[in-house]
Length: 287
Image (cartoon, rainbow, N blue to C red):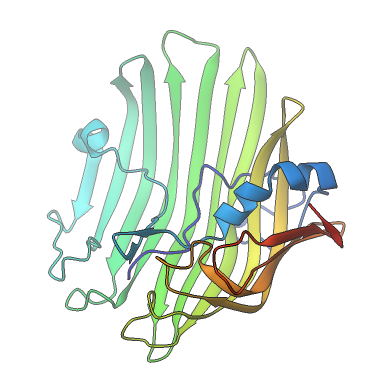
């Protein structure tokens, strides 16, 4: 039960405009139209969906490993990963000091640290934390006009107590792509917390339960061939989930909402049969 509600970094990007340079997202930005909400409602639903593989929640923070590429310029503490409870979470800090690494048509640079922490390596259900503080770039040697830079900073975390499971993140990823002298900048991630209260803590995912969502989420969409960036405030009301193999929509009751900087609200309301697609509204209009 390690990984769930960890959003894909590829889907979550926004403009830095309107947000400070710290990790935290603290306010909505951007105004989404009904047309844009309609065309992206599937993406927004996927962003808030629990994903299962073989009955186990999946989705961990996006990559940034590429061990073979950076092996010669990476130090590890401890040097050998240990996974005593076989939960695929191996406590280790990797420190990158890598400049101008050749890989095919690209030249790669990476500096900083990535730390993975298993909160109790004797308990596969104990929780984990991924922490990043890293910068880097890659440039195409055959296309000198294209250079990409990035930075990752913050954390993703699971915490468990006797009655609840909480997933939280305060994570910011920034990047830029320059082609022919024209730069496009992205900032993605989120500052959020999801508290899950299972009906049965010994069987938290197939047994159903309730979920409280809250925080801020960043999305990057292409509109009219241009990058458009949003940060949405998210909240939930009476949200419950069911058995993931019979509830194909996963959620079976309640709703969650995204609110933009102009107080437009996109709401997903779920049906008790667990199989019918949710009703989605933009303000009060069904989309």
